[in-house]
Structures are given as C-alpha cells and as structure tokens.
View 1 (tube, rainbow, N blue to C red):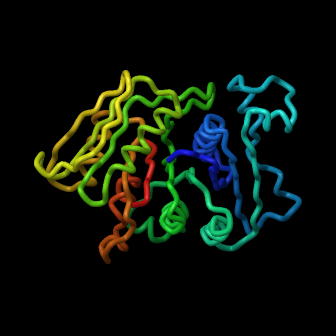
View 2 (view 1 turned 60 degrees about the horizontal axis):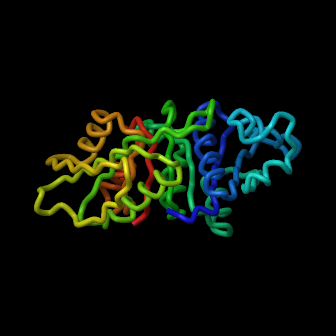
Length: 275
C-alpha cells in the first residue's frame, strides 16, 4: 500500500460523501500525498463548479492550520489538493478516462449498498470504477462512520478483519492492513483472519509483529460472504481488508464478486486489494 503518493476521491457533494472525504484527507495528511477530488455532472455549467467541499475548514478544525489560513498554507503541510471538474453524461467513464492518464495509488469512494433489482436499476459507480481501474480502493458505505473522526481528525482503528484463502494470495491484504495501521499510528490493534476451510489448509502468511498488535485466526465452513459479514458484526470491526479478483464467472457477473457482495452488507469501511 505504501508509499502513498496519490489519492483520488470522486465526490457528488452529498452529505454522506463527507465521510469518505474525511478519510481521504486524513490519509493524504499522514502520507504527505496529493489528493485529487473530481466531480462529474452533465448539468453543471463551468461557472457553477466552485462548490467543492472546502478543505481548509477541516484542517483548521483538526488543529493542523490556524484560523484565517490561506490556500498556500495547505501546501506547507506537505500535501497538494487538486479539484477536477468534468462535464460528462457517464460518471464512471469520465473517472476511468482521467485515471487512465493519471493513475492513483488509492481510490477513496462512497458507496450505496444496494441488492437485487435496485442494484440493476440504479447506475453503479463505485464498484465498476474500482474493478476497471485496478487500484487499491477504500470503500466507505453510506451511513458508516468509519475510523476517522470528522470533528478531530483522530483515527480509531482497533479491529481489522482480513478474510484469507489460498487463492488469491492474502499476503498483500495483510501487508496493506498493517501498513495502514502503522500510517495511522494505531498502537492496539486486533487483526482477525477468517478462513473458510480447515486449519490444515490455512494459507501460510507473514504476520508483522508490533507492540500492542494481536493476531487471531477463525476457521469456518459455509458461505464466505455470510461468515465475513457475521464476523465483522460480532467483532464490531473498524475495517475489512480483503483481496479481490473481480468477476470470475457468469454467477459473479450477475450477483457480484465476493468482495462486492461483502461490500453491500458491510457496516464498516472495506479496503479492497486487487489480486
């Protein structure tokens, strides 16, 4: 996951979108990264594109900038803020075209959790953008508070759920989880690895050690999506980190990949790592 030089956050200016912006901005501040915000709307004229979420008031609230700070003061924090306007009929296409010319290290996306007919009748943006861009993606489901306080900017990452299997190799997800915990300065973290199978076929992984970090294994049988969601709820996890292979068959195309199905029921942010 690291180094984290570029973070990309599409925004629709909605109230629930603020949570994903808070996470994107916090990670940009800690990683000293470039944060690009993009808004796509075919109905908004050029002169009406000044309503992007304001960054400086958040940084002032978090105590990173003093009151009355100028735009140049943001750069002194080691971060760069870019705001991109796009007038297009298709939001996903506009975002993917931009990312094709300027790839990102991390996507931070808000997502609505829809199933069944509603998923087919509404335009889905977050899932296809993440799938086709092949970028590491932090999904923040609507209505989920996440692990960064909007009032103080303080992180609260104490429980991380990592589904593991032999294929795809889960090590990149484990590495991303520990690197994120390190970046956020999380001292006391429980990493819960859930495996659908047996103890004998539990994948061999490297578990980075750190004072205050604890690793636990859960062996289960049955539907992996049901187990992941149930474990996340039981442990009240702050984050799910999992590998994603995209759509492997016709069933995946109709129902969604395992990661997409977990995302639609998760009550915590999900960090998806492309295999």
